Length: 89
Image 1 (cartoon, rainbow, N blue to C red):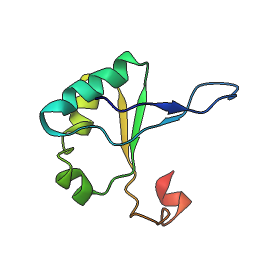
Image 2: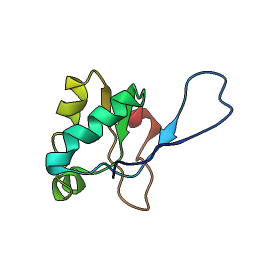
Image 3: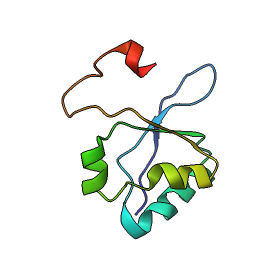
Image 4: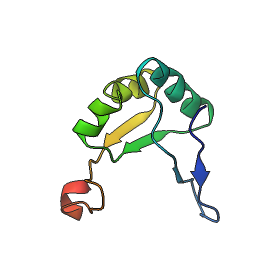
């Protein structure tokens, strides 16, 4: 089962959605293709490198690039916030 996108309503331009992490491993390419087919342009992952490894998502950036999606990794520890807005943006 592919991850469901939950989109914010009422934005004047564009769209922002959230989702659970995609399935990893052999399913990851299909997950990324589904995002492309759903009209997603940019993927932002908040997972740490350790979480990406545990969940078999280390190739997510590569698959996003293959599908023409822009990929950003902004790792944030659980129950935490980014260390600095300057470092993030």
